[in-house]
Length: 419
Image (cartoon, rainbow, N blue to C red; front, side, top):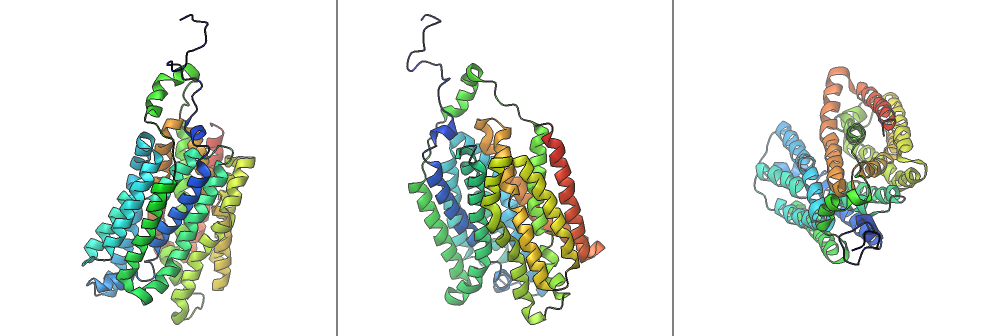
């Protein structure tokens, strides 16, 4: 063939072949809607056990109050630990076998495990199944990978913000559902109801989610990209800064959780109202995040993700400080709402930058590492907060967390200059 002649149809030259996001341009909005619903239902099911978890642990044969508290904490944290361990693996497999396959795997796995939790006979089985739920589940994480890689770059912040809103709503509604259902259908029946909700999400994922994925995408990276453009080289300093920041988001939100009931008790709340008020204060940050997640994601699309991340980190750090000086519980709740509103802009903006920091064929793995960092913060935050509260006093938790957030803003600003 003459070197100057145009390539024949079906020839090996692939310069005009669209990428993954372009091929799924017709599907991403529908997929986003299913992912929002699925993230909501799975997180409702995972968080609804909070109000009755100690009661279930006691039903399983644990007698002393100290042991009930200990096993409840282990059982609750096991899921997040499992997700932190396996999120990068599922992200890598999403790059290799498709994003939809990982969504289906997560939904089906969580539906089965959630139902099995309703038939356990020992606290060890409960902890084991909660850990397995994290290892094989992670629907919200898989949703982030799909939405983050399918949405157009100019709409990615908004799309990830909408997805984050659904997940936050699930975490907010879950404890409310968990406070009502056991009285109607029993504790074990509540787990079956949670499994049924996730099963609905699994069916929607199987039959409604569409994906144009080809395993040739990965081989195409080696064969076609040298003929088109040089593959994007990862900036490891930027990636490290994004992972640290993602961890700090959940760490900041969870650092006060172990001592918040004690802190509220010191504000004069009567013992018979303490649990209810503590629940309201804990939910306040999720409520604030729901109000602003999509808006701040869209703002990141307009003014740049770096600007939103730095501003949100500084503002969240500032809002942490007055929480140490409140005199009434409602003041703490109001400040936690403000904190949630500023935190909400971080995860969508971080995910958008993470997507752009690596080659398209590695997007899933990168977003998997990001999810792992987030859940690590959710595990580490309560531990750090509890230790600081014991060693330096409850007020110090707010000062230390605020300082870490502002320092993280400095790290992000520095990393931005190398991007």
